[in-house]
Length: 69
Image (cartoon, rainbow, N blue to C red; front, side, top):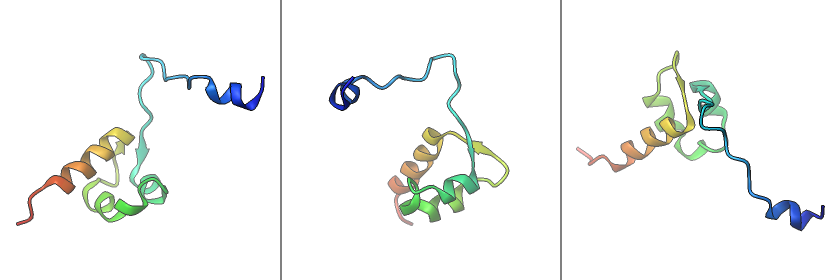
């Protein structure tokens, strides 16, 4: 199979019965994905809890949409 054909293949989605992976605060703080929002992540997430990427993204978006006091 050529590289073009491989690239055209759809990416396999996670099966519906598998839970979304969860990560600790420290892992999100080291992640390049959340580099721009590290301060928000550090301030709003709890050290001892695990979060899915969707949960973290929702926390960041909710914070950014808040009206300044």
